[in-house]
Length: 142
Image (cartoon, rainbow, N blue to C red; front, side):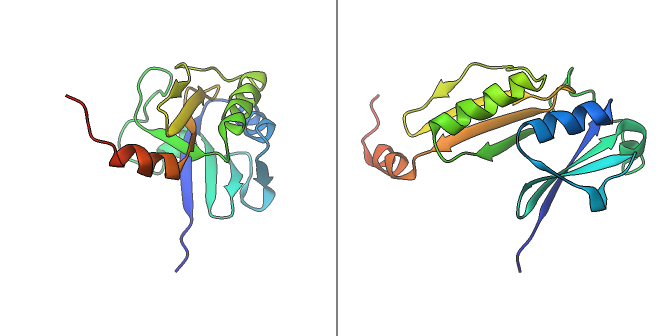
């Protein structure tokens, strides 16, 4: 069975959030969007549901965290190469996002990230699996 994942994010300003994510090159699925939420298509099986905070609250009895003040989750999105990582970050900055951390090069993996206007953090990364396998086979130095 093929599964889908829906990442639900509370947002303060739905039009701003929708513009941010479509500005990254993702598409809006109007069939599952209205004035309470927007369905953003990340890939064939991955979607982000942008939900206005009062509507988001109806799905949980717990308090809704303020993502600009506390991190509850880090979303990670793979890229085809290092250039695509940096392209995503540049698009995020142009669309009103920020970069909470500098880029990191781990040899086999390159990562950078952005925060959307509400503060939700996304790590975008490229991992060279062949380089990872090679690095994993090397003896560890004490």
